[in-house]
Length: 526
Image 1 (cartoon, one colour):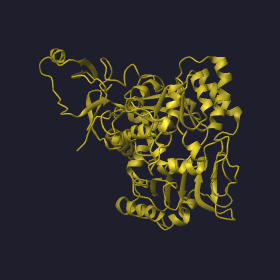
Image 2 (tube, helix red, strand yellow):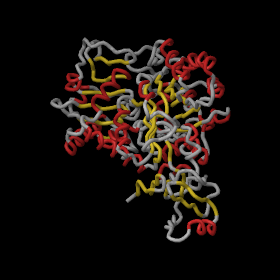
Image 3 (cartoon, one colour):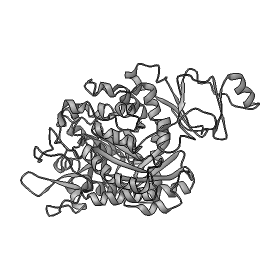
Image 4 (cartoon, helix red, strand yellow):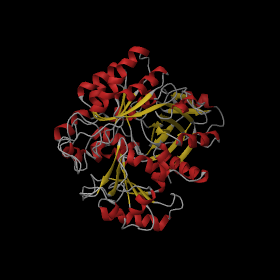
């Protein structure tokens, strides 16, 4: 891919026409061609994220940035409050359904090591509703006005698969919501209120994606937002490819024209999504062993919890997927969640076979080594999440113990056991910065400089494949994407430095200079 770069790459008609020697390229190009001199810069295949949530890219671009350093400046709760106030002064709430909204706060990175509460967010405003979304996407916090508008009171019961946190010694909500208590509220607040605003958010999302070299993005848990993406595609407005995995509760979308392996106007439904637990850094991932540091209010035996407690329901969903030969993405962070999936998968495979579905484990942060053999047995792609080693490696040492922390996202072990692997951003969990993904996959260095699992590091070349050719394989697109090869789409990225030649610790500093989709420039750095 990069190790033996061609002297010339010729593209036309949206595809790579020739890769090789200069003289032959000039002959094939003929008269009237355009020559692009990279002047020492580096050409790589277009980036393909193994898993992200494109529908939320627009919100990440539009709402307040509550990320901690180095991606933002919210390292304390007072800084978070200040950021929300400043954002409101600059932007108002006309694009966010009347709410002051920020994305990306991280209790693990905040100096207070706690969630903000409604009392903290009441300092932003008592007249307007305020929502702060956790970096994991699995939690949110609202102020008193927000609780009022969401009709959440001391009498509101916890929904199945979710928790409404309470004030000490009280049933009064403290503003923090977990999992299925939070996700519907976030969707309500962040879903644009008009088609015009919907287009605005999508456009901002594409601007963000292409600035980081995406030529193929993913909506990793499509619900009603599929309709908005399909409408946008139908109008011919998508500049790059977007594939969606629809939540298992919306199987009707699998029966539409959008499902299939071929993009229509740069959009397709690629398969179905099953979410079986929550977030490890938020300690809602479902484990077979207790967390060493349980969340506030939980006992010492706390192990997280399932998103779908009924094994029979999980078995029904898995059976439906295999019966219809749908590719499935399975969100499992904890080993108990993966056990639940494998238990459901075994009888379904006996009934329907296992013919190259490329079902994909998403995240797999806390899986056991002995479960990796089952990934190989059932030909499950492992799209893992080495990014956590930087952002939460130090936190994991506290919440699951130092030894266990060294084995999060065991991507090298998966590779060595013959499992197909990719890595991903899960944006907007973090910025959709695939060079940061490459950096963390190679270095696995935490915020404080500790190496989190030295033996799980990949080489820069392997890490580049994780976001190009191997991700193309995961999506059944390796015949048209992922390498600089004749006949493939001219999906290209120009970088300011060669990621195979720089100090690996500087990979995160490499900049995308231009993104080219099927021969057309869709982003150019100013």
